[in-house]
Amino acid sequence: MVTKPAFSKPGSQPPADLLNIHITAGSPMEKYPAKQHARNVARRLPTRSGLIYLEGMPELLFEDSDEAIKFRQKRYFLYLTGVVDIPDCFVTYSIAQDRLTLYIPPFDPNQVLWSGYPPSIGDCIFKYDIMGFHLTFQASPIYTIHHQVSRIPSRIPGKLISDQHLQPAIDDCRVYKDDYEIELLRRANAISANAHRAVLKAVQTAQTEAQLEGIFVQICISQHARTQAYDPIVGSGQNCATLHYTRNDAPLKGKQLLLIDAGAEWDGYASDVTRTYPISGKWTKEASEIYNIVDEMQKECIKKTVAGVDWKDTHLLAHRIAIKGLMALGILYNGTAEEIFQCGTSRAFFPHGLGHFLGLDTHDVEGTPDSPGWLLPSNPECMIPPDNYQLFLQPHTQRG
Image (cartoon, rainbow, N blue to C red; front, top):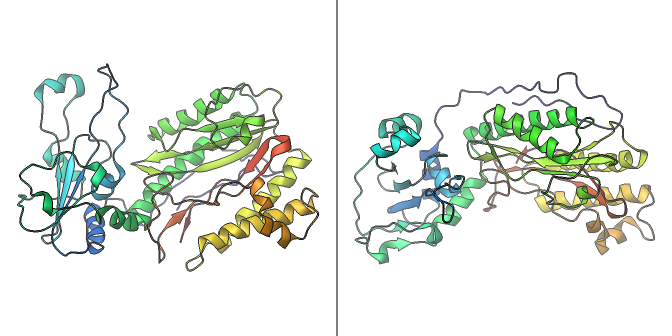
């Protein structure tokens, strides 16, 4: 579990040790459960025989350059292998034989001087939940994803290749997170929490949004999370009201609020954390009132997020709480709460959905969840356009 300190609520004091966060796990992490993932996917395919074939991400260079583009593994391939950082691989899974095989690039002695030794087959067997086998092609289908195939050998008959079933089968499996995946998500969120707290500590002395973005990324890298799940959003003043603001270059002087929406990635798994801080260290009366509305939205939606509850109903609950709070402040009027809800007026203050699936991507695949085991960040907000400020709480990842 992750021990999570209180964040900057109106009237509260920042904790003394801003970077003190601990992770405890119920059992030690061993190998990424790739073979179990493959078995889960195979159970959702229409036959009990055949071959799953997926390609990893190749190494790519910038146009007219020998400089490599920053590598990011294909997510479907990662889900069936656990391989985060090796380019030019592919994987097969024999459904009938229950054999998962990873194919890695051949050793090139000329590259050792420049890039060091690549992982060997022995390294991969030790690190990954895979096993080798001799591939044979019989009259069984080969399941693949149509837009991610470029290297199936020409000797394989085209009639054996099926590209309709594999992607939805993996999507349905990716929705449910096993204990290993939960631990990866916890690590990503713990590091992100440390970075957010470092930003909170520096917000009163920093001069620009860029400085605070630099602090966030530096803390993540120093804790071995070198990749961000998405480009950080660090906005002050009017910039807070742009949902996907990424310029992060404005001065902080004279601004009331800072919004930071940023999350680290750990071994391919994303976090998604948003906070709003008063730059002066003190909340204004108006900001505090809006913050308290969002705080209630957050708490009540978390209570509602349990197995068997439709996520859409939780989203609508957030709108009803926002309407009640805004009516109490006199911002919404000329109608009952139900009339305002039916007219959709609250969407002007809460324009996006309450949350999204979280996993290998920040906006992860949705699949068709029908039982406990899936995760969603809760992202209530209340944006007041005339004053151009926007208040968020940190998403609390919930296991359905």
